[in-house]
Image (tube, rainbow, N blue to C red):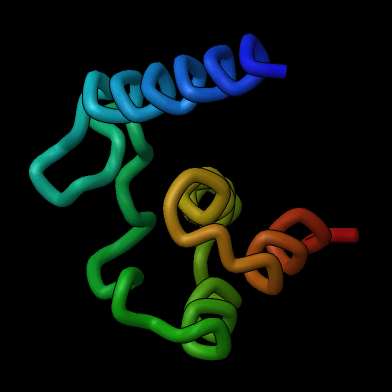
Length: 86
């Protein structure tokens, strides 16, 4: 039992160390994170983003999907983008 606690403690410390070592951009996002698909996207709520994406081309929608998956993680937007042309 004591060995389990030791391993758990080591794992937690390693997780914290790895999080500190992950390259970060100046905005706190991972350095390799995709950029927002267009200016102002970060400030949009779900309804605004989906409304704006209606008028965008497929390349922008693909960029938005990548951005949502790695940054915003809004399930409603991700689902809509994944099923856009279905």
